[in-house]
Each structure stands twice: as C-alpha cells, then as structure tokens.
Length: 249
Image (cartoon, rainbow, N blue to C red; front, side, top):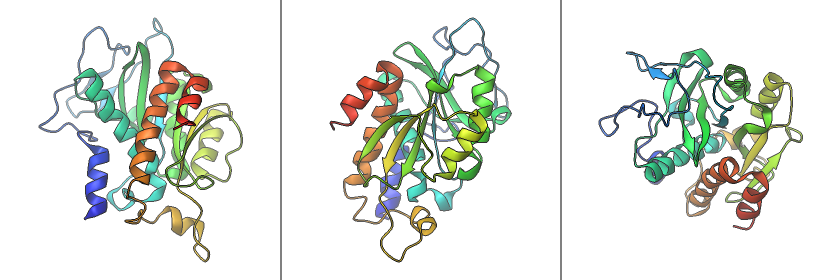
C-alpha cells in the first residue's frame, strides 16, 4: 500500500485521459500549437505551425502498463507526472497527457515562461522509446539541443539528479533508441539515479523491480521533485543555470 500511495502522489491530478477533475485544455491564443485540437475520441490532431519557434520536447522514459508503473525503470514517467502537476499548480489550469496517435505518444502542449513545450510519454516500451521521440522531433522540427530526455541512471544513487548534454548512452536501451532515431547524441538528459543492483541481482531484474519501502522513504520523492524542477529549469533558464541549481541541491 505504501508504494501505491506514493505513486498516486506523483501522478497527482495528472492522467493519460481527462477525468471529472479536469476541464478541456485551454484554447486561448497562449497555445503555441495552432491546430492542436482534441478530436471526439480524445486523440489530438497535431500539426506544426511554421509561424512559431520550434518547441522544446520533454519526454520521460519508461514502460507503459500498470505492472511497470512502480518500477525503477519508470522513474522518468514519475518525474513527468510531477512536472505536469507543478505546471497545473503554476498556471491554475489542468495539465494532463492525451493520446496522439500520429506520433505514437501521449502529449501535453503549453508554454513555460513563454517557451513553447511538448511534454510527453512514448506509447512504446523502453527499448523503442526513440520511435516517438523521432516522430515528434520531425513533426515539429525540434533540434536535438531542445530535446530533454528524463531517464533512470544506474551510475547515480537514488535521490541524485544530474543534467547532461550529449555523451554516450552508457548501456541504456532507451537512450540507444533515442540516438538511433534522432541520428545524434546531442540531446539533453536528466539522469535520475536508481543505483546499481546488489551483488547477485541482474541489472534487468533490478530496473524492473518496484522501489522498496526504504527507497521510498524520502529519496524517491526528492529525486522526482528535483527532476521535475530540472526539466522546468532547462527550458526556462538554460542548461548551465539548471545544472548549477540542481547539482547543488
């Protein structure tokens, strides 16, 4: 029950589909994506608007489905959910993901301090995350340096968050898929520590296991909160300032 309660707090008001708590997304002239409208089946038809600057893309990596929801591999999903809740609080309007079949993802589009941004989750499993990322990048002409990938990181302890530009994938299959479909490594990563597995435990088992009760006692909450803040700061303040703030936390 403890983990279910914590995961519920991470999701907060956010959901993949509108609920009774949500109103339809605002369609005012502050929306940077002309042509993004919810169809009757709640699937937005996304069309880029060449009259505006390329948006940022923030995407959390993970595996879809309830059985993967509480696992270490899905900590990137948790951070995206927290970011959406933070945006809802800041902007005093609903912020939730809706299906976008054309890009094989769930998306939310808005502005953060004037910067157009798409926040997303891929519909595919971790190893194919790059499919949706590539589709979104091409659809909106998003350069790699405006793509922010939020993911789990074995080489950092739980609770530690680090921001990095470019570099190797370090064996992470979600990053490998991203690099393949973007044809570059020059995107931004928000690395959320989950720690190395204990001796005798395989990496695949470690990342696909739920967080333990000890891990959820402060460290997981701190990591999710800091990663959501990191994504916000990268978009609104730039990578160097975001690194100064988050790496000092």
